[in-house]
Image (cartoon, rainbow, N blue to C red; front, side, top):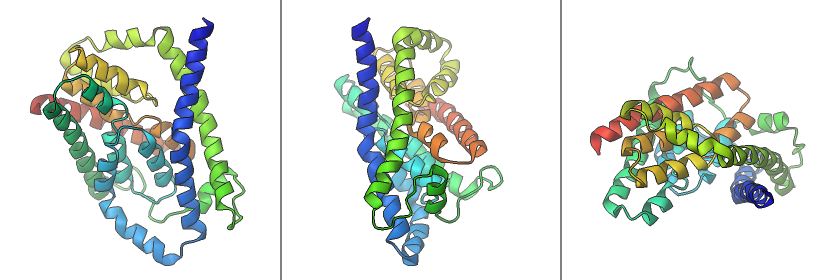
Length: 287
């Protein structure tokens, strides 16, 4: 029992330490923009936003959830658009890619899966930025990092010590990640995995809805378990896609923590779920 408890604790600690550099560099970049860059930099940021979903869809393919965590912070401060955030969330592959490669299913299938995730993420991001009504989720038109700092009470008014300010932000978010990871690890260790396996064994269509719901858990576990079930031929490729598209690692947990608009957060979560189910069904038709 002590060994299991130690493993759970170490896994939570590893998840936190693994994301620490991504968080720190993100906050350091935000502090640099706020204190060191002039008005011209904001003009460049606004121009770059239109290409954000493309970059987000491609960056999300890198097998780790650091970019989804970074994207959540950048969206909360208005530095990237909702479309870019969704592109990153949808395309984030986390542990899926290494597991697919080690599973020996063939590079052709792997490229199709990863390629579709990128296409789905980019397409959704572009459509959201251009056609989603502003009344549904209000756009963040201007970057506002100082407002974010005030909410976090990080006391980062010192323009000369952006290193310390970035560390204070990272420290706060890391504590949230550690405790949440600990809870998720306990749940999965003591029976959660068997329950999910049973839920995904229902009809092919309903399994998409269940997989996408499972994917919303802010953790690396969904992508690992879904990929293992796919390699064991227990679920279809569409069910795999539905769950891994809606799963953004710990990105949504960080978004909920740093974005002050709780209603918008819930709508983003619902949008992520709907897109995961929809694209999962499309994937089964295409592959």
